[in-house]
Length: 258
Figure: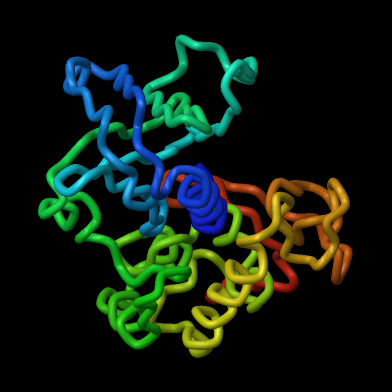
């Protein structure tokens, strides 16, 4: 599933291409909105909220999409061949200049503008949002002190934008084992600040990196590096399923508390 910085960048590209443009054609390829036609309305803007995308159309409508595991938004000049199969398209928005196609989107729904809070209001503070609130994020994270930190970081109700890759990398960088209870993490403010720093640094990059190296295979400390040597100490990286998600960590750099 894409991380928050990837979704932020997607929103930025859609916003730059479509905002202020009048839709000449709309095609919602989901049963609930198959007959909906928003052509003739201007695109007001696209913003990200954690891993959610909100494209505001006209005075009354908001297109809410979520990439989930396989989704992506593409922008094409008219006449350009699509890079994904047409049967994967869930939304097509056309203006005089661009065709925006949402492929394999996990969520595609159109809601009334005043109902946006109903689809994203449950989210915690957005690490890349204009209303980022570190104190509120810490309050939510510590509400259940017995919860493993790895699970708490992935819960978008605590703070929005961290996915499985950043979870693994941030816990390595801060030397925390993923099963450590939140209440035992003495460096939680530092962890949250580092999370914001890393996402802010990567939001303009196509190739995310936590090591500072953008070369293929060198971007990550532990994520997807099971059984390979730790870049710091040489110990083999461990992979296991924790809380229903795969986790990666270095047993030496991130010792499990007894």
